[in-house]
Image 1 (cartoon, helix red, strand yellow):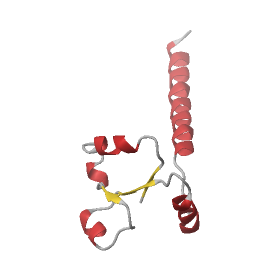
Image 2: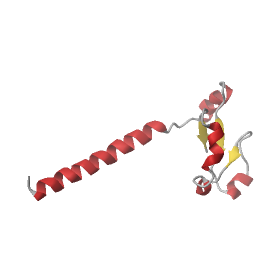
Image 3: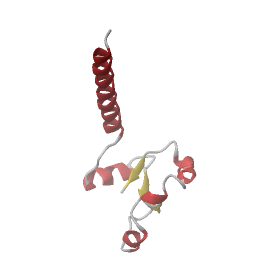
Image 4: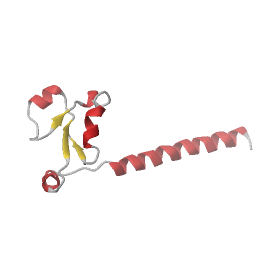
Length: 92
């Protein structure tokens, strides 16, 4: 096998890995319309509402029953989500 063939196979593998990762991530994220969210909130157990907006955006109004962790702080405060591991978490 020549070096050019190895490079082509390597590039193909990287591209394939990128598309597989993208497909996996897109399947794990769901989007809800307001009506669908209302239905989800009525179902037992209701999902956890996580407000990931900035502090200023959060002060302008938040959904009742949600809790706030700005997206910039998610990695540092991820342990706060551990108690909700068995429930769906809906971020907005």
